[in-house]
Length: 297
View 1 (cartoon, rainbow, N blue to C red):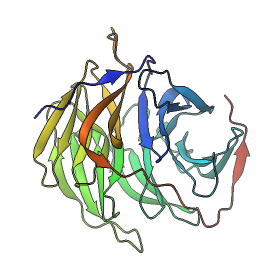
View 2 (view 1 turned 90 degrees about the horizontal axis):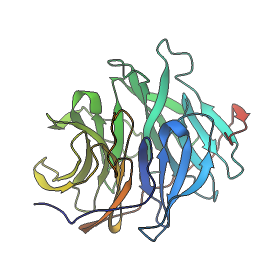
View 3 (view 1 turned 30 degrees about the horizontal axis):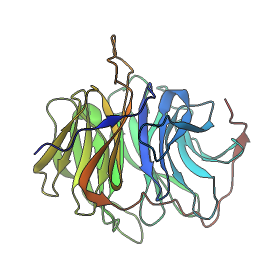
View 4 (view 1 turned 90 degrees about the vertical axis):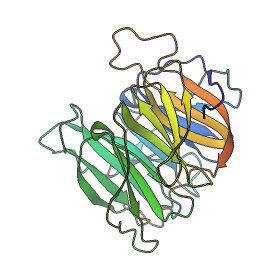
């Protein structure tokens, strides 16, 4: 089954990813430019810049109870991005890695914990990791040996996590302990032979929407992995997806294309018939900041 046609906004991003619906706003990032953007409700309106930081910005989640403050996977670690643009670092676990590293995709789970992946700039095999931020602000490593982590994406009850290793063309599924956040054994959800699985979202029926980089498609897979429908875009590199009510938002990228097409790098929207709950906020009960830097560029 093929989904409805998509509409492109006027902006063109170099590496648009990390798109999330907070319940009130759709936000996204242009990773290497360090820009946090919001999408006005008018699907033809240009994007609005929320913040600019002097490091790559992989993805954010709002911090509950602190309007305008975000937790961010940025640079070589995880920080709080405040309304005035300052960054409070919780940890920079990749700062002294032997291979130059940066943070990539990230999301908060329904329990308020924040999960963030890292990767090498040159996508070195197995150099990436997945980190978890607890509600006390502590950052702990969860998985290693990943090449290019994308997602994670959680079911609405937080019981399952989907994580793509894009360079290897695989999406794995893990059970998540609701109390300890410990992961169960990995289960291969699906492999993609053509293109790479990138950003993901899980809808209210438990199906997984996957942006498939290099193919110009977004695909909806049922919980058993069966392909349910495909949305085709006039852009070759879909990178991130989120659902806001019954509207699917899709980021794309121009990076690496020698001759980008007119709509490569656009943010697209398309109507679908299955909604999704908002991306959860990060909940921090107590945090000790380790350092602060100015963050306006």
